[in-house]
Length: 293
Image (cartoon, rainbow, N blue to C red; front, side):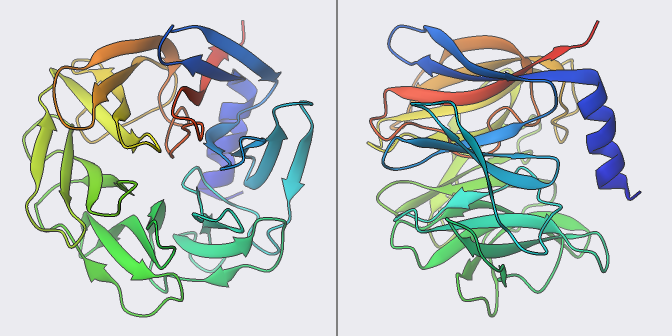
């Protein structure tokens, strides 16, 4: 049993997962489904019909109208983690899979309705977070030369382009809906904080100065809002984002300004690792956890 399978096995034994939505205007939370095992990182499809999540190394769809769950066939990629993203037209899904050869995460693309994975990143570890609005480019977090930075690559593979160069962890890159910017989180200022840079990596800006460790900025489809995950600064190291912690979902204007707490929950790793905005920019999907007694 490799370390990734062991980690999932331990988590599955210890936690119950709640797949939830929240209305950003009213703060009303709704539990869609409860799972007796770990599920993570919902994406919301553009037509509003499905949530896509990972569990036990596989990728699944959850139909909101019926609660029906279906596995997406991903061929040999059966050790997928919680870094996945839908193409803008929702015909494909990018996945991060721990390869059998060296147990390092690499990025693949599969048809949304299932099929054989096509390798994108030759090097590992690589963790997918964003897909450009024109469908041509992926952005991801990758460890190269003993440091984690943000990289971009064509969806067809080939050479990768390093976009960040600061020492320490840069993670969670995601394009703004207009493709002008990449949002990400970085420890470059001490705590893990939310940053934004031009799509070519130039002009990084510290967007929200929080007294917390903040992860995974997700921009709403209308470009108006950013939601992200916040840990108490005394609860975790700046470069760590464990599961099973008391965390907050925070909401802030994408143009900059003060954030507000959208929800408090027991979660962390797996809650919103990927963009989970509804297409109307009014709802957000996420996962919370409850430990077994």
